[in-house]
Image 1 (spheres, rainbow, N blue to C red):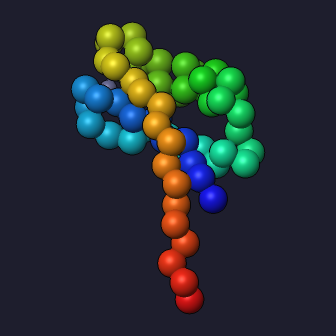
Image 2 (image 1 turned 60 degrees about the horizontal axis):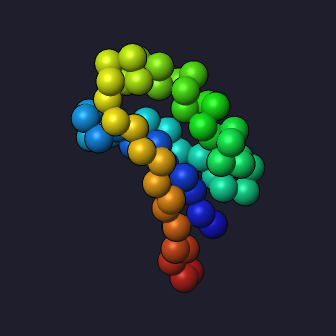
Length: 58
Ligand SMILES: [Zn+2]
């Protein structure tokens, strides 16, 4: 399972996390523009980074 994280490099926080299976890169970009309007408006640098979750064996 892999996720895409939207990370604000100025605030050093993860703003959102989207499951790759359900969201395309285009829709994530659209969502991040809406949800992170404050950060974008303030001129923060927002990056989209891919995160692979390794499931630990039971
Ligand atoms: Zn920010």
